[in-house]
Amino acid sequence: MLIADFKKSGGTWQWAKDGVIIEDAVENSINLALLGNGKYTVMYKMPNNKVIYTEDYEFKTLPGVKANFDYDFFYAASAIRFKNTTAGITADYSWSWNFGNGTTSAEMNPIVEFKPGPYTVTLKVTDKNGCWNEYSREIVFQFGQ
Image 1 (cartoon, one colour):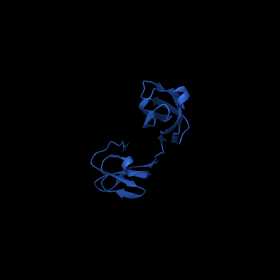
Image 2 (spheres, rainbow, N blue to C red):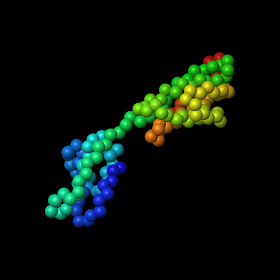
Image 3 (cartoon, rainbow, N blue to C red):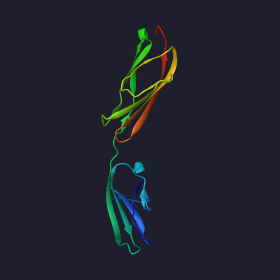
Image 4 (cartoon, helix red, strand yellow):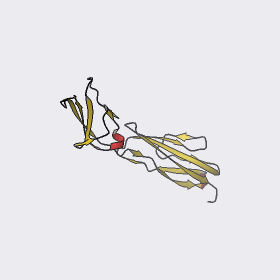
């Protein structure tokens, strides 16, 4: 949400994206997530159409972080090795694993012991900007698989 902070009464707001007027944007705020990347201009016009305030903004969304993982079974150790395959624009992540068996981890690629059974494993990845994404999948651990 972008909000133009200009204290004046009696006029109207007008927004444009990449030079094209946005017809239904007549308030002092606009939801950029709905309109997408671009150059935005906000104007405040008096009843005589005189523009007394104008400001330009550039809006770009970043790809963000996308949590994901693979895994391998280590039956001799009754364990699963998890391989973090998270994708994103930064390399500065923190990891929060929940293995569905009462254990958690903050390691990038943990190895965790399991008893036979189904488990929902969840990985939440947060980047240095506070953007996060979560990925869950069910894993069935069985001896002799």
